[in-house]
Image 1 (spheres, rainbow over the protein chains, first blue to last red):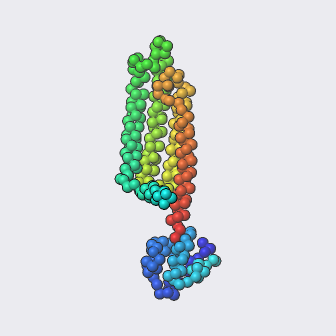
Image 2 (cartoon, each protein chain N blue to C red):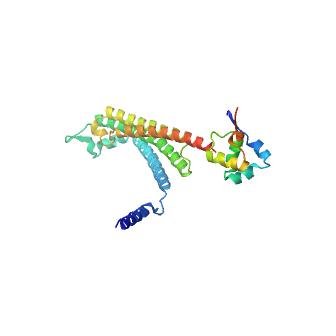
Image 3 (cartoon, rainbow over the protein chains, first blue to last red):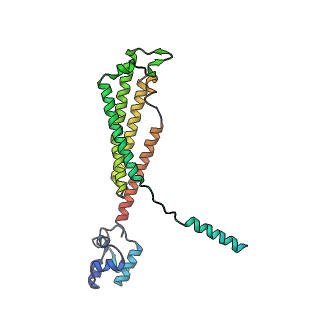
Length: 66
Length: 191
């Protein structure tokens, strides 16, 4: 996929685990794993908003086009 | 007066939006039972037709009091009637044999719906197979109706184009299930 999700780097910078983030954004760990491993085909704006809110980042920091 | 009318309208709207709670019957379980009964009945009919052909039953049917042996008050000679009955029995056997895989595929679709996941590529394929089997059954019926004198076939095969229309509807349904399956896959990959 040309759009890469930089979730690993942001989680490491915020000292947060994927499990913590899943609990905070009310998304299942399985779905977040799909996002992290790049297997997701689409992301909802509501999901993007929740992740950016908890990780205190911009969508451009989370998603990158390569 | 206007206040009373708006209260009345609001009450009506509230009644209309109140969900009626009742225990819904499990239609899929009932459908499954009906399909299983149909499969058993179809297997029985296949065995029955095969035994009739194998046991040379046409001669008994030709000599019996069956009404199709008489046309215009005259009894049809056995040498004309027996081949017609035999061909009809073979055609009936073929139709029931073709119906059996269709019923099994229908059972597979109902089972997947009971499991909560009907929109799968397998169900699209099952529906296409059912459509082709229905067209094959219609082909057999058309062939028998052409080969056999009507005074035998009319008692066995009701020739109808409804079967063709039903098969076309099933093909359309198969395409819908294929689209549904793709949409479901896309939804599963949406976070």
